[in-house]
Picture 1 (cartoon, helix red, strand yellow):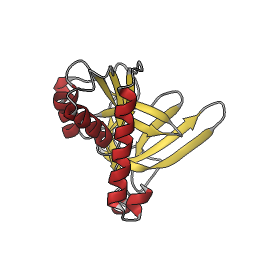
Picture 2: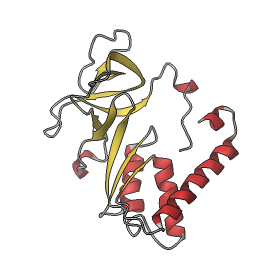
Picture 3: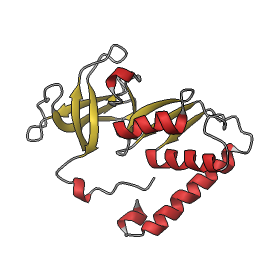
Picture 4: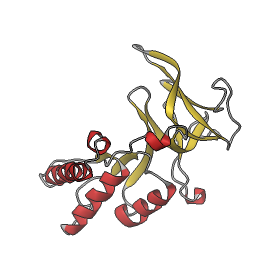
Length: 199
């Protein structure tokens, strides 16, 4: 992101290419790697690089992927599952940071039309979707608001941290019986100044 903030798009692209080359080298070295963490851009670049070499993510041994980032949209999710990975690779959308950990996505259901809903890793963290002009007021289900995060671990308590994102409040799910959030994206008041990484 530092390179992008400086306007060095070529440098950022070269760095991403370097990361992908490292991943291909590691995957081809005979290690028993089953799980990967990636952003949409890097996962797509890795899949395409492996295809250019006549192989695939599945053939490399990976069986599960955690992926997240603002580019993880329903359209990209469909493309990834149908064109890059195939039916034998499990992928779950993830949302999070070092304060909360990873919120995983609602289990895939074709009936959801690739909609992505995240559920915080309770009890470690709780996500609320709150009004833009009243951070103590939850928005209604399906309504748009700003992401507010609570974190509680043995070492750390952060009450009501306002994230840089917004999204829609979602109903609980049987696997995750607490509120979720969908459509996460940079908070509209400073979205134009938010740098989205090449990674």
